[in-house]
Image (cartoon, rainbow over all chains, first blue to last red; front, side):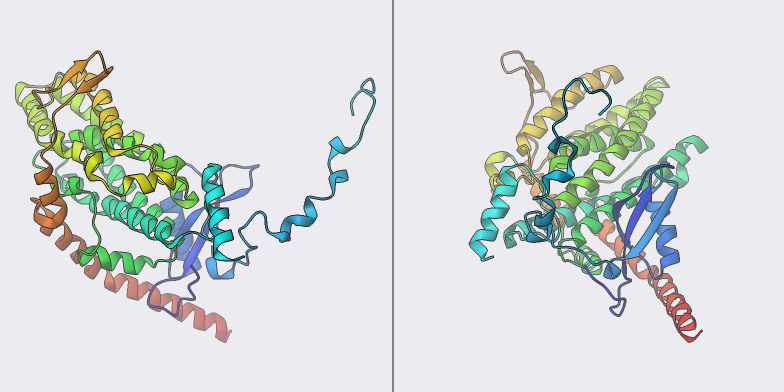
Length: 99
Length: 313
């Protein structure tokens, strides 16, 4: 998937679109472009033909550092064993309001 | 992890109806099947611009022209979503384009039929896009994440394609006798090729079982074909056109329409290159690619110049 532009093809850009104000940018797909500016224009034409967005990010795919895709990876293990991070860990009497 | 453990994890993901994502381990055959299917699908969208593109400059009104332009632009977009999905499997888009224009990868047989009248624009929207929707809606739940997500976007847009076609036909059948005749004549030409879009009959489709086990396919070719016929008959009645199959009749026992077998010899001839427009479609795609070469080179040269200026500053 990585492409440094040294090949005859254009580099790959990943595209993120903010659907409307108040929402996060969300990954929608990718495209090839010779530079970031063209990537942005192409992303507008390709991914927002029907008002799907108010803002676009493009990022060179080769600039993304990713974790291993496997969700069972030990990388995520530390987040599973801290049950006290969840509100349901704490027992509160039923009759105490607003908690 | 060794291969057996990885394969077990893959199988469990599929069995749990979870999605496979690009950097997950997957069997080579799964990867190959997906690359072939997604590339073929992408090529179909790209080649699919041609039959209708043929009518853009001869659209009967500005309204129809604007609609047709938007539709053909969508087909290009669908092709690009799908090439992007294919690339997540480790193939290069340039390579896929080369395989298309050198005839080493196929596209849907339907686009090898000519568009002879403006009614064809309507009938393609109604029947061809209708058949495509039947095929594509289940693909939104395909086990490969990027393909499924591309299909969700595509299906949202296909609904416009089908409705614009049907509306165009409604306008024509409410017009003159000559216009009604055009709609009927176009329906006669596109009915059988549309049924062929679902692929060979189940008994002659050796890869279906494996694709269903992998969650790539959710229904067999014959199931989808039946669904399409059942959907389409009342739509034809509402238009007042006759579907050109004397064997078409309601079967109360099955709760489905019975219909005749398409001419599978014709289907085989068209996919192996002998359809009415195969050579023309590929030649036009090749020409467009070659004539666009200077644009790609210029954009690349500009990007390099800008990058070297930034580096020097």
